[in-house]
Image 1 (cartoon, rainbow, N blue to C red):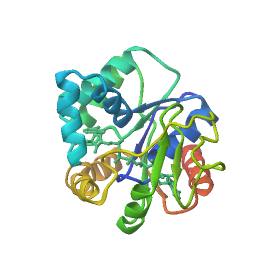
Image 2 (image 1 turned 120 degrees about the vertical axis):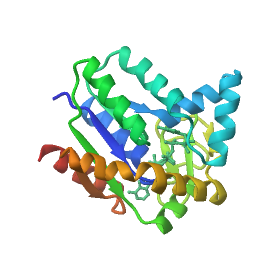
Image 3 (image 1 turned 45 degrees about the vertical axis):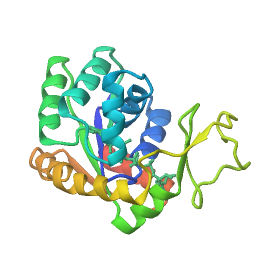
Length: 215
Ligand code: AP5
């Protein structure tokens, strides 16, 4: 079944981890604005350099840039989308509503992933990802089977993000509570909000997401 969903939650809530599971299980397309912006920053363009500075500080990139990125991806089409890390402001939510309307799509659910701040710090400071296939790991809770080698694709290009440190995380959390958490009420009022306990183990969270998507 084709569905369009938003994964909403603070940095480290597990949005990327769950999006990858949903892609595999349901064949949806993951649209991660964080990944798109990380790709843009490696381009060496003026825009890429500006984006890199803002991301490293832990602040939000302008609505104009991220809405432009999502517009471009939606125009490529797909059989259902997972919006991962987008929208993050009320202006982005409004823009998404218009973009979906223009393309004849509807938003089926907004899954809020609840995780307390203390756990977020542990998750973010221990995270690393595969630079080749994007698989997400953690030093303690999800290490690679063979040290330094990705379990999925065998690449040794394992990376840590420049903004995964306690200082940037503090700003990222402030930005989340100030600008993104109002979306919880926004989507609740539209009867789209489903909340899950993001503190549970990865498979348990995935099962809960499947269950709320069925209801
Ligand atoms: P983005 O890349 O979107 O980062 P984020 O929202 O801060 O979220 P993260 O990717 O850090 O965490 P996640 O929830 O995906 O968790 P993950 O699954 O990796 O954005 C980065 C920056 O880009 C922003 O700060 C901003 O500057 C800019 N940006 C992006 N989108 C924007 C927008 N729309 N507007 C403006 N600016 C934008 O998991 C984290 C760790 O926890 C991993 O190690 C994982 O293995 C582990 N883990 C996951 N689930 C569990 C579990 N259930 N139990 C135990 N460990 C778990």
